[in-house]
Image (cartoon, rainbow, N blue to C red; front, side):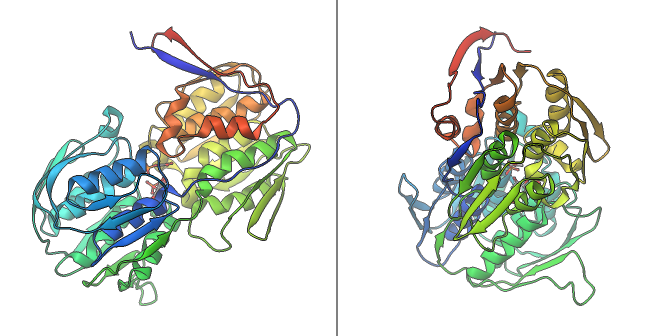
Length: 438
Ligand SMILES: O=C(O)C1=C[C@@H](OP(=O)(O)O)[C@@H](O)[C@H](O)C1
Ligand SMILES: C=C(OP(=O)(O)O)C(=O)O
């Protein structure tokens, strides 16, 4: 018997009004750490997210020989000779896809493993790509071993990155340190989450790396990183806009008003797309003096949207759609079946268990709003499933969320922040009831 804890999601008894400051972006933090580790001298990272995914990245880099000082949000990274060791990826896509190329540059064997659930996440594409450019790797999913020889040839490689943009980002991030750099060609259905590839390219350029995306010369879906030095940078991490979406959704579903300070005026984070999404659903959204404010409408409209570029936002958008007053169609997100869990199945199962009407399509979800009732909400070890349940819980009494602690993947203080947002609202707290696993 496994003891499962449930958190009674607090109901909003009035419009939510709050200002919520978000910790740093997972995606920017983990890219900054990798680039700092491979740089020619010491870097700092300020605004570092401290969460399970980023702490796993820090622990892994330390294991491989990188000096990382600081327990808080400012860390100092001192590169050192890379050596072998054991890396725990947890359930972090960024760790399991960004570090194998780093390991190929180490002197020694690097053993990768992770959570049971991580063993089914797509990985073979990037491991095969690394083999094709000279790496010695045993295995095609977790657990696997990279036997580093201190350098990697690099060169041209063709991959199908339609399963995850992280295959492209992972190869590009370390490539300046490959003898020949890398040219990655994508051949397959379109690459999802392209803003995350843009984020990789922008950060590489900030570190002085030469990157070309020769779309102009007719080579769409090709990225080239030239060999050369990665410069040390004092990175400043933006707040995590994807995590912000759950809090902004609270305003949208309660006709409330939520602001998030330090919203960047220009960003590659996909979370920025929530502005357009909430506007389309009927909310009033404004960005002034770096403060994003969302005012919720009396009635939220459904939405028909392709989320291919911003798939990370799907759990929030699905929760919004389930509380809207007209149908929604979420498209372009077949790749979510390889995220922390099969998010299309998880969202449809859980919303339907509460009385909703969600149908899984080949590449998304059709959501017909129905009155929902309380009940258990399973989170599948997925931080964004847990936060989607919390959004529904604002409007539907009696939703008990399994393992709310799973939000620690990217937002360890989610419960505290949620309760603070609802200050003066009755918080129903967490209990542990020894229920057996479903
Ligand atoms: O590179 C990154 O930081 C990420 C890329 C995306 O992955 P996919 O392309 O696999 O969707 C995104 O969903 C994930 O949360 C973070
Ligand atoms: C898909 C996600 O994470 P990962 O970086 O583990 O792929 C996510 O955070 O929504």
